[in-house]
Length: 146
Image (tube, rainbow, N blue to C red):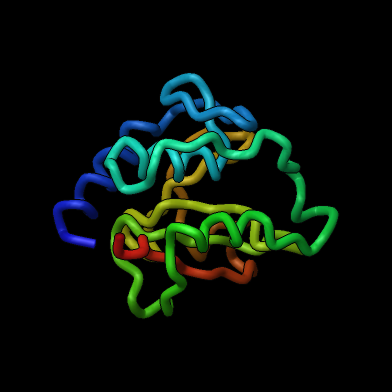
């Protein structure tokens, strides 16, 4: 990605802050879950195609089974990178429970990410020190070149 694209992602991501958490929703200011947040930001920046994301995914999949659905969908448009290569606008996907199924957009790794989660909606967090993520496994992704 170019510096301009990364800057656009960071700027757009910040406009989603304060959006309430709502599963299966992708409406800035009205509701988003973590995957829909990523989609909404990248779509607004013209970096992923317009598409209908599945509406039948479990919002609690990582609590129940070792599913790869979330990370498989991410991998269609993003490629995995090592932590040392993470830059603003990249993604971090956390394994919380049995599956890599919680995503966030990196603003400044590891100091600041933006995520959508139940109690706080779309909000900022520390990528590795917050209680939710401190011990979680994580993978990093950057957008695939078109």
